[in-house]
Image (cartoon, rainbow, N blue to C red; front, side, top):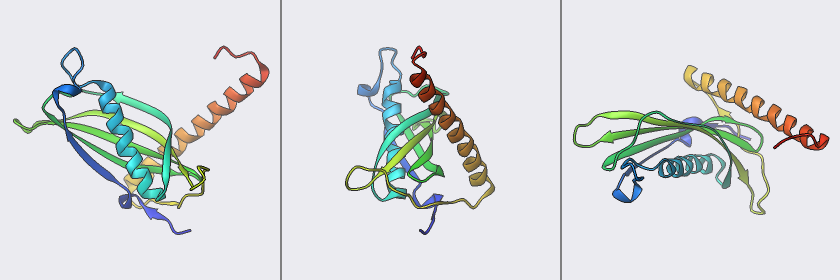
Length: 167
């Protein structure tokens, strides 16, 4: 199976934040940003898989700065790691005040998606081609996060099998 470069599936999306996106404090609601993150990552995952995908997990989501009504929010989603049937994507969110031109990094997230075939079953993905030093670093960090997730999943299964877990 031929590999795919990260740039082949990278997505850049932008959306203007409107009053209906605001929370009671007057800032854009975090849930609106979360949905945009999931949409951007999902589009990049579909581009890589060329099939339907489902969100398996959000490994990390950090909000760094608020987003305001009137800001242009730009999301950049790209693959970090591809396993057999799952892939990790990173999303960087920036907000721009269109009047002043000032931009701020507002959020970052890591999401895992699983590719599905026509019967809704996971299927084998094309490998990821990593080329630059930054891509190699991101790929290694994603591999480490994957190992930690799998170890946690094994621990949870053992806990459930022993019937002594609190969760």
